[in-house]
Each structure stands twice: as structure tokens, then as C-alpha cells.
Length: 193
Ligand SMILES: Cc1cc2nc3c(=O)[nH]c(=O)nc-3n(C[C@H](O)[C@H](O)[C@H](O)COP(=O)(O)O)c2cc1C
Image (cartoon, rainbow, N blue to C red; front, side, top):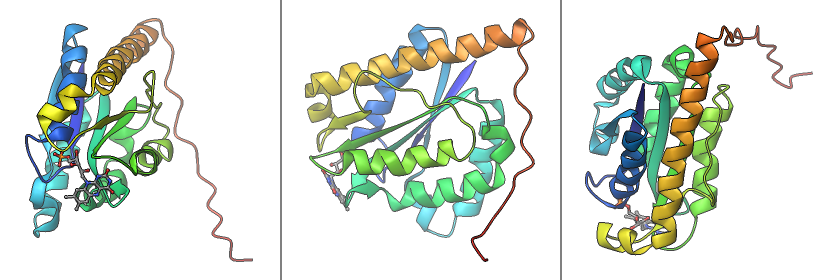
């Protein structure tokens, strides 16, 4: 069992990475394998197609996802939005019905608005959202400051634990013959009369 954690920051080892690492450690403690995938500037430097193909390949093997981003102007980073726009178009089937969570890091504000945007990728694709004991955010401008946000650290730990529980429950369900719902034949009305 494996969880893919996507770091949508421009900084490879910054605050978002720090928060994702805490979630990953909690998952590892529960016996779940993890990989942190760095989006970085490739998303906006003409390499988005190869980046998304790489991510789509990894999506196949993953049993759960954590989408992480710094808050930029009260939204997720442009980088992660570009990548998720593309990924959710081309890897819909591989993502569907797998548990997901969104986490953000901010100096101060815009956190819940940014989480809301990230969660919407999962909730348009039948992915169960995993929660913690508070909304999934940490505060800080540096990894050291994030580690000082003791409540934020605990929120990330509990998120990892809860995701492990859900992934294991889904696996146990499969062993007992619980069948994943088939994709619906979607009715698309575009509000044109
Ligand atoms: C372009 C830009 C916009 C930002 N906008 C916000 C914001 O709206 N609210 C906020 O609290 N912090 C804002 N910040 C601060 C970052 O969200 C914060 O430092 C975050 O923890 C950085 O994560 P990272 O180290 O993973 O990049 C902004 C930073 C940058 C570079």
C-alpha cells in the first residue's frame, strides 16, 4: 500500500515539504509506503506534459494521495493547479475512488480558501476525502517555523494516521468481496436551454 504526496511548492524542501513529510512519517509508522513528488518550476517552464505523464504513471500504483501547496494570494500555487488540471483530465480512472487529502502551508491567511480549491479536484472524481482534527494547514515561512506550529504538526500526524486507517479499511473490504462502485454514465447538462 502506497500514498503519493504531491508537493506543489516552488521550494523543494520548504514548508509544504515539511508538512507533507510529517504526514508521510505517520503513514510509514502505520506500514504504508510513501513518495513525495516535487512539482517545482517544471509545471510552468514548458515541461508540464512530461511532468504530468510521470505523475500519471505513479498514480496507477498509489492507493491514496495528499495534494500539498503553499498559499499564494489566498489560493494554491499556480504550479499545482496547472498540474492537477492536467492530471485529473488524463488520469481520472486511476485516481477515482482512492482516498485523498489536501494540505496547505501559509504565513498567515487564505488557508481554507486554498484547501477548498484543492479538495474540489478530489470531490469531482469520487475520491473519499480524509480529514484530521482541524483543517489541514500549517503556518510558517520556513520549515523551522512550521515545526514550531505544534497544533499544525499534530493535525498532519493525525491526517496520516487517518489516511492509513481508511486505506487499510478499503483493502480489508476488497478481501471481503466489497466491490468498488462502477463509474456512472454521466449526464452532462451545460445549461444551454
Ligand atoms: C507569491 C507568494 C504569495 C504568497 N501569498 C500568501 C498568502 O496569500 N497568505 C499567506 O499567509 N502567505 C502567503 N505567502 C507565504 C507562503 O504561503 C508561506 O511562506 C508558505 O509556508 C511557503 O511554503 P513553501 O516553503 O512550501 O513554499 C505567499 C508567498 C509567496 C511566494
